[in-house]
Image 1: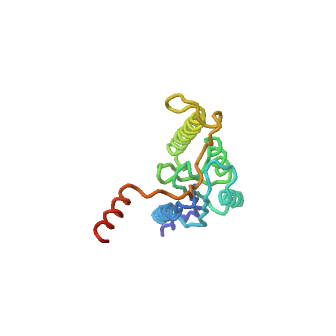
Image 2: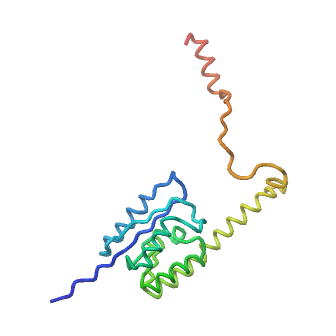
Image 3: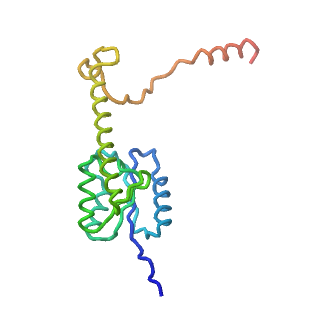
Length: 188
């Protein structure tokens, strides 16, 4: 008689940055992946918080459960959903490795149960960190000079960042005024 294949207990980690985004899209894909590979889903951990935050409640809960060996595999959508930097990603996965937990990143085809998967993990993690640093540098540079070299942002005393909601009354557009005037002329 043949042996039954070993069922792997998997944790699913989903993260979105904004409340308007729906983590259910990630969860559905990751659950399907788990089902297709005969993995039993232990728990789904979902954070709605920016990835740059070092403390994320559900990630912390997942790390706590990992230390208790509640699962043997973590499945995530993308590397940037899990870690905020290459160092952070490596620290997390090394901690998992010590307790016998593997990592799969579905969209980037990373599976740390293989040597090729580990190499891909480190390369893509480094590229993701580099990209975040470039975005940060560009944003900071934009605070000081615009594309024409004109002083803008903090040093010029102008507010920086996302503008607040403008609730001031609006003038009617030209199209609307013309339509309104034409309607009155036509007896409307």
